[in-house]
Image 1 (cartoon, rainbow over the protein chains, first blue to last red):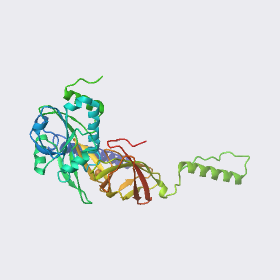
Image 2 (image 1 turned 60 degrees about the horizontal axis):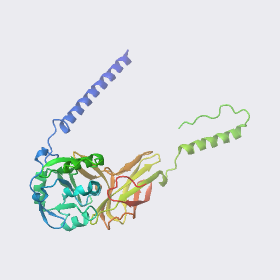
Image 3 (image 1 turned 135 degrees about the vertical axis):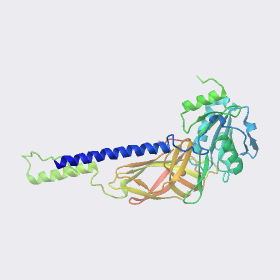
Image 4 (image 1 turned 90 degrees about the vertical axis):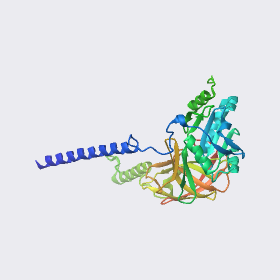
Length: 212
Length: 169
Ligand SMILES: [Cu+2]
């Protein structure tokens, strides 16, 4: 029976193709996401315990700010740029909302917005931009070298990406870092994490009991 | 398309009025299903457009909306025009390992026949660059979407509070 043999050929080819696909997917996973993936430089924190250290930047009022100025209080730190249309204003607005909900306890917290776009984010630009948000948010910008040094110590990622129509945008770490009062890494708040989890993290950082 | 056959037994009606009745019935049925849909500008519906107030000095804003294609053929968004910004593009945003990346779409945005494309926070957005003036809460921002087939559709985006993540109701 010829047609029976044909069906057998077809079935065996299907098995072969399925096997090939399965192996290809496995190999792809191994090299891209799996143990075979090359570590990305300067991306996710290699060792979170190492996050922190020295920096020298300029705040949105034109004053020099170093890591020593934020010691003694825990810190909530976010990285972005003022030409960012979605994540940055949204997160700054979230941070302002958390400060409001923390009430007077929020005074025990440094809140820092670090610009990853020093070319466009001048002191004046940072001041204008932050005027829409909580006045307790401190904007930091600096020279490209100062930013690079800070990124190395705080292990945040940023990269300038040209846009086809001219101009550029910035890829950047969009997590909120929480640092303890010694300036060492404590935890993160991810982009649009629930208020239910963000606030307890902040209260824990501040060493205050949850409300209610 | 198959329609249920309504003529089974109609002993008391003469054949001409029966034919008329069937024609009307089929026509009514088709009008319900929307087939054959007239392929005009009205196959593309733009809904729920909104944008956020921009901080002073900000030169960019993101716009969100839903594009619904009720027609039988795909359509594509060719360009966006507005006097409020120098350039408006469709961008994607991805969040991977805590890193935010924003890119211009390589190809024109396709709105599939009978489908919809949503531009929502954290994903696709209209990227408005080189704003002539900040967007203030309560304003309405006008722009024109130009589609390959549907042509030009004027859209108004209400400006809501900064930090908003949901379309206004
Ligand atoms: Cu964009």
